[in-house]
Each structure stands twice: as C-alpha cells, then as structure tokens.
Image 1 (cartoon, helix red, strand yellow):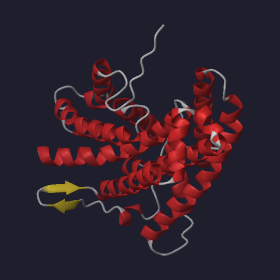
Image 2 (image 1 turned 90 degrees about the vertical axis):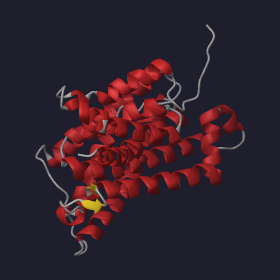
Image 3 (image 1 turned 180 degrees about the vertical axis):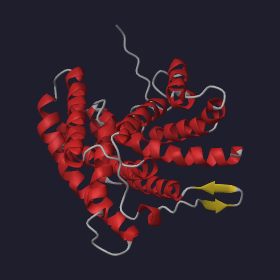
Image 4 (image 1 turned 45 degrees about the horizontal axis):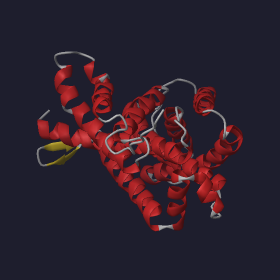
Length: 301
C-alpha cells in the first residue's frame, strides 16, 4: 500500500472516530459526564439499522439502508429521552463517580439487550455488497472502499449540521450557556433539562451513524462495542473533552497515525497497530493534559 493511499485511508477512518468522539464530547461538554457507554450506543445503532433495513420497505438496497438509518435514529431519540430522564437525571448533583458508573450500567444494559435480541452471530446489513461494492473506488493511484466514502459523507453531514446548530441557532447558544454556567443559564430562562435531553439525542444519532460504518467494515457483532469505545475515547481525549471541533480533529489525527505509522510498524512488531491509539494519547496528554483543543483549567488547592 503506497503512503498516499495509507494517508487517505487513515483520514477516512478518522472521520468515523471523529463522529464517535463527537458523541462522547457532547455529553461531557454539556453535562460533564464521561460516557463510558458510547461503544454500546454504537453497537445498538448497528443492530437497529440491521433490523430496520431488513424490513425491506423498498426494493432498492441503498434506500433500504438509508431508511434503516433514519428509523433507527428516530428510535434512538426515544432511547435518549429515557436515558436522560430515568437514568441520568436522578443522579444530577451527585458525585461524578456516580454518573460515570451509571454510564457503565447503561452500556451493560444496551449490550445485554442487543445480545438477547440478536445473539452473538456475525451479521451483515441486507444488500450490503450492493450498497458497499467489494471492489474499491479508484481515484488515480488511490483505491478507497465505498464504505469509507459513506463515512466521509456522513461525517460531513453530522459535523456540518452540528456546527450550524451550535453557532447559528438559539439552541446552540443555549447549549453553550449551559456548558459554561448551568446556574446562570437557568436564571435566564434556559431549560437545562431540555438541553440535556437534546444533547443525548444528538449523541445517540451520531453513535448510530458510526454503528452503520463500523458494522459495514467489521460485520455486526459485539466487537463493534469494543471498537467504538477503544477509538472514541482516545480521539475525544486527544482533541479535548470539551471541544466538538477537537473531536473531529482528534479522530482524523488518530486515524492518520494508525493507518500510516501503525501499519508500517505492524510489519515489524505484530499487533502494535492495536495499541497505537493509546500511545498517541499518552504522548499528547504528557504534552497537553487537556488535549490539543481542550479548555485549560487551573485549580488552586
């Protein structure tokens, strides 16, 4: 594989990591919650898209998969409301550890539910080989699998919509206000509870999109949960836990290094590519403890 192709593949993979990291960062930025369940949200999204696209509502497999994503996302909105209302809201005001442990419990619930419903047998999306042809797309000397093209398009859609929402709308202003000072935001009439619910909704939709791509690349199995957390967490920490833009840049950097340096070193040290994300994370945190674009907080004790 030529270096240029490795770079392009790394950046394409980085868009997946960036979308998963955005799901992670949003919850932390608004609610200061470290969401350990992000990988299981990705897993649930993959299975729901598989189930809804399997309904065969139309003959075209591409349209079926898009409808599956839309229906799964709508279903995810209801799950997001239930997550915030019944699991997280009762713990607001408690210790950070309590909130983190609740996300661990949430992840176990989501993973357990998918195993009970669909088992552990490897599955693929209906008509996947027609939607994602096995022959890669050739652009000059570069060959890119079609699934990565979907990833790039989905990442542009998600981040474009989020940036517009975050910077150009009253809702985005309310999100920024709540993330900076919830008490002051509440005194100005902003409903903190609604902002928390909407944030969980966006996080679930982003995780479900990542589930579509990871499920298409690796097959739909429980391993998607591990991959989701193992890439979302380092990407989010590298970019900065409270920086949505840093989430995407952290994902791109992680994907680039993993598919270039990791691929090259893997020929000499088998298996090192799997730990490259954590090596990169360690180096970044040693230099910038709050991530590349995270907000630096100085506390006096």
